[in-house]
Image (cartoon, rainbow, N blue to C red; front, side):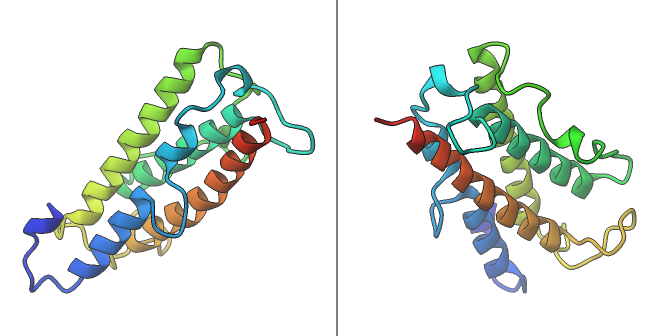
Length: 163
């Protein structure tokens, strides 16, 4: 959709840049690079001196990003309770398939956000009627900031398990 945007759309460049940055690969490692080849036998373990396991970080990333996307889409959405609703109850998933599902849900929500950002029908600057001043631009920047921080943590966990 980004390539087909009219040149006269005032935020076309901003939309392209936001979508590209959310997808990753600019100043930060990509989500795909972090989760690729993650040592599965370590996803539920906290490395020495690190407060979260890979599973906890992945789920936190997924839950928080989903919260932001759903909030941006609808005033009927209710956010999880803070802070416990944004972190998994356990340090490890019940099985390896949970990791795969969480990765896919993260990617699906990211794609939905990129789709919203790419659509000129979604005003980047208009305040959501259901919020208290939030805009799609603000929520996109929040995803960028939050995800880059926790992807760095997730990469640190991954590197700590590599011999």
